[in-house]
Image 1 (tube, rainbow, N blue to C red):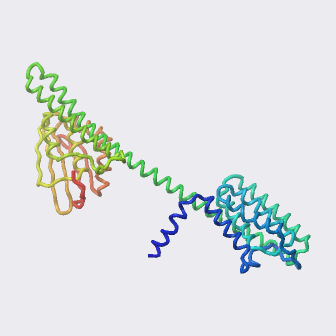
Image 2: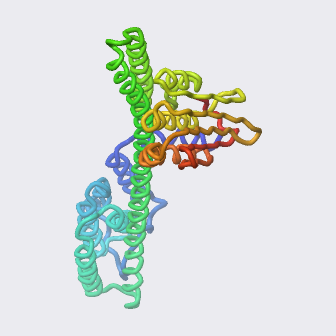
Image 3: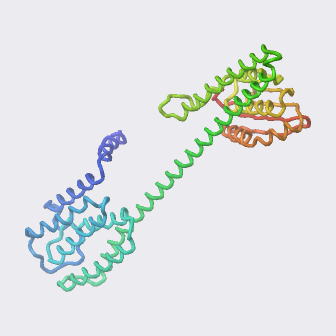
Length: 383
């Protein structure tokens, strides 16, 4: 309940711009300075044996102390300079202590927190101004030990140091946020790059193979050529479907699932068979996650490219702990070397499977090439 009430109060306050919020602070301090119960509050460098009665000029000085706080975040120097000067004049003229003098540590904190340029020069200038102010106060007959001047300076320094510490904390938090956003963007770009590689490589390879076959068959076997061209058309449509799904993921205006429309593994097998690749599909039933679907897709793409027409076995196994796919192609050394050279695809698959907490292996065998991947059975995103 208290948390809800706090949010209800802070939300409209934080919606205001900083000048408006600081104007409230300035007005509040000015109000406190004139409250009878706040008489004697504030901070003075030294005491005087007698005080000058408050008059109109004292009132103007009090306003000059508080009013600059409106600029404490947008223009810290323009806030500090008049506040310091008005406070110094007020004390030098031996007016009674006022709560408006608290504007000095507030302005110093703001200098430390929000002033970004000429900070060292500013620190030296403020120290010199304080020394002059202390000499003036002493000559005006201020009472108290000399050590009090050092103590007062230390208090003012603490206000500046605290503001500087807050500035550093804010800068560190902003740097971490920027790094986090950059890392998230890089990860998203990597995901999109993998998806584009998987979709384009597989479907374009299939279309090239079928188009080449149609070119050879168009005179001798027009029916076969027509079937090849029909496969090219179907593969192109499937590619467009998956690319649209991927573009919906990129476009925040679209309400789309994070996973592209890959279709069923059986559909992938049939499309690859239509390219002339003999495939034996062994499964114990059940769907596979998209990561494993992409493993099979990449392995079959490499088989068509580097061992076209060579026997390929796709095996899917489900157990209580994991789902495993294995694609083995019996071919020549060209298959092994070519598939191994497709580093971007295999690297992307390894990263994709690792994201599910799975394992990935790819390499040549005695008579071909094998790709094997496994993910925990708890993975819930099905292809």
